[in-house]
Amino acid sequence: MRTPAQNAELALLLEVAGTPKPGNVDRHRDFDDLRFEHFLAGAVGASEGLRAAEGGGGVGDAFETAVAGMADQRGGNTQFGALLLLVPLVRAAGEDALTPAGVESVVADTTVADAAGFYRAFDHVDVFVDDPPADADDLDARRGSDAIPAVEERGLTLSDLMELSAPEDDNAVEWTTGFPRTFAVAESVAAGTGPVPDRIADAFLAQLAEHPDSLVAKQHGREVADEVASRAAALLDDEAPAEAVDAFGDDLVERGVNPGTTADIVAAGTFVALERDEVVV
Image (cartoon, rainbow, N blue to C red; front, top):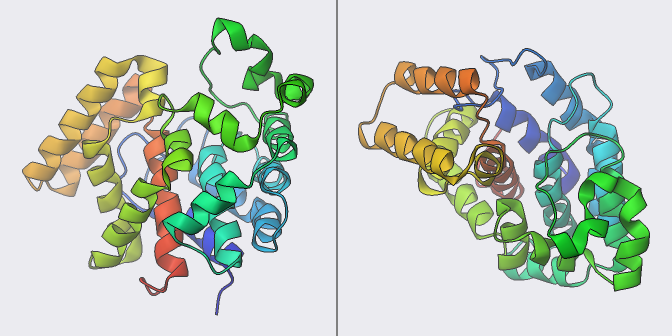
C-alpha cells in the first residue's frame, strides 16, 4: 500500500505522462529547454519534502525541501505550483483528513515560519510571478529569502500570503477556498475510463475549457487566457480527435502559451484520487 508521499510522487509522474495536454510538456511533447525527463526527475527529487509533509512537518519547510529537490535537474522549474498544492494535501492525508475541511484546517494552521519557508523556496528555482502591488514591494516573491524580514515584521502566515495572491492566482484560490477544483478533478479522473494518463489528459482539457488559466492570463493577458479556454471548450463540444487537440497544443507551444496552473491543479486532483483508492495503478 502506497503512502501519501508516494501517491503524491506518483501523481506528478502520471500528470506529465498524460497526453495530449495542450501547451504543456507531456510524454509526446518537449520544449526546447524543458523536457519530459526533467519532470520525471523533478517528481523524484520532491519526494523528501513530500515525506516531510506526510510526517507532520511544517508546511513551509516541507514545501521548500520539495522544491529544492525538484530543482535538482537541468530543466529548471517543473512542478513548483503543483507542489504548492500537494504539500498541504499530503499533510492532510498524513493526518487521515483528506477532505476539503481537513485541508482548510491545515491551511488555517500555517504560521509565519511557514511563510518564510515559502519564500526560501524561491531561492532554488526561477518562478514566474506578477509584480507586487506598490505597497507590497518588500513582499515580492522574486526576492526569495530576502523578503523574510518583511514577512516577519508584518506577521504574515502562509495562509495570509495566499489570500493576498488570490484571485489572480488559481493555486492561491485553491488554498483559500478548500481546494474545490482539486477535488472536482479527483472525481473526474475517478469517473473516467481507460488508462489513468488518458483520464488525466481529459481532465486537463475539461479544466482548461472551464477555467481560463491564471498563468496564461499573467503572462499573456486575460484575452489570451479566455481565447485558450474557448478553443478548449470547442474541442470538447466537438469531441475532437487527439490530432485536433495536438494541433491546438502545437499552436500554443509556438506562441509560448503554457497553461501551467491547470496542470498543477490536475496533478493535485490526481493525488486525491490515488490517495482515496478511486483509481487503481
